[in-house]
Image 1 (tube, rainbow, N blue to C red):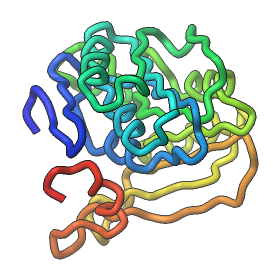
Image 2 (cartoon, rainbow, N blue to C red; image 1 turned 180 degrees about the horizontal axis):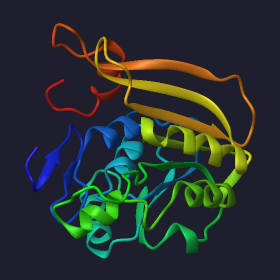
Image 3 (cartoon, rainbow, N blue to C red; image 1 turned 30 degrees about the horizontal axis):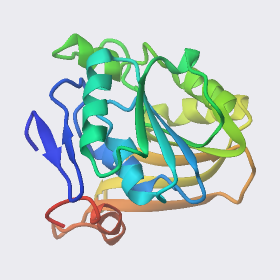
Image 4 (cartoon, helix red, strand yellow; image 1 turned 135 degrees about the vertical axis):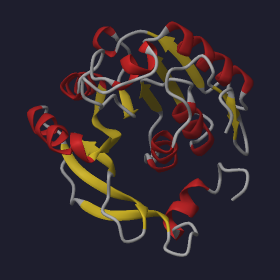
Length: 235
């Protein structure tokens, strides 16, 4: 991956005008979030449009996906990436804040939300704003997702272990149920540090499993490989 972009099997992402580059968290979320019967999907904090385009590749032709991005430069680049992709009719990029956003109900909302705490050192202000919980807190993500979701809609997020407890508090406060959790293990034998989490307005039996990215023999875990193989050029 260069500082300018990343090429996948079916589309290319330019991200040189985006604070947050293509990364493992976004790729995991885009490959995992259950599109199922969703007809309208919202990607909150779309950045370069990565997750929105991954969901476009995985979803039915009639699905409509909105990528919502606060930063002007990132929103512009995401729009360019969507227009250059095979799915310009499926993906729309809108600039704005979730707190003020209004639209017909969505069946699925996805987000790779900001999660680092204040005080961490960042080399650029835009990256700091993208990573800090400044413009969108977990409390706001859950409350506004509840406002924008259809009654049977779902919220899919990727979070670090530091945000796990807060996410569960906010889910409970906004009448969401945790219905699926995937523990992301970067190397076999280590403890998980990232979690893919699916919340629903409707109560289901909770499923908990794990994804191993790298095995002890330096290969890829079977589940992870199956998820990302449709996207990575060399897999």
